[in-house]
Every structure is written in C-alpha cells, then in structure tokens.
Image 1 (tube, one colour):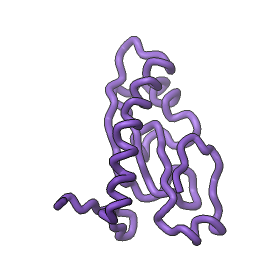
Image 2: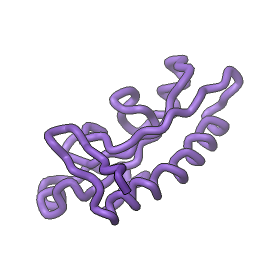
Image 3: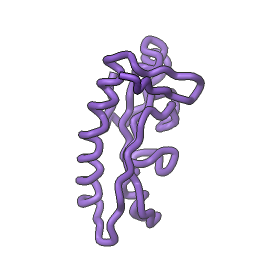
Length: 120
C-alpha cells in the first residue's frame, strides 16, 4: 500500500494486516519537519537543504522506519512552488526505486532500521 498525499493516519486495523508494507512519501528529511506542511516549514525555518523521505507508516504521523531519503538544495529565491517542483522531481526518481527494492524483496527491517540488499 502506498500513501502519497493521503494526509490521514492509518490505524492498527490496516497496519496490522500489512505490517511494514504501507509506505509513505514525505516532502522533508524526517525527522525534520513532520506533518502536513514540510515544504512550508523548511522554508520558514531557513534551512539550506531539505528533501524527501520514503518510510514505512506506523500509527504516528511521519514516525515509521525510514527506507530512503534524497536531499534537495533550497535556493535563496525559492518559493513554496519552486521548491515543491524540485521536491516532486526528487520524489519521482526515488519512489520507483524503493518500490523496485520491495518488489525484489530486498528490504529487511530490524527495529527502526531498514536494510537494503544492494548485492544485486
């Protein structure tokens, strides 16, 4: 199951049926800027680098084990729209890669740590 822009918390009735199989895409480098306004929050804070995070969903917003992240540089003249455009471009590159790893059964989870078998 994939959540990208879903904006609702899933409960145990779904997560227990699909343990470590519900993915979320977040527009920031978690654990920084969790919640619904990752891009706006990064700009408001004045960071020089933000990015995207793909993680397994759990019963708390943006707290599940992190699978992969990609950094995105914040430019001095960025607006919400220009930064969002680069964030989405990074999402479109990373998310299919994560889905491929899952399809090939290359991920294992130990506690909060996700390991990727890169021997392929």
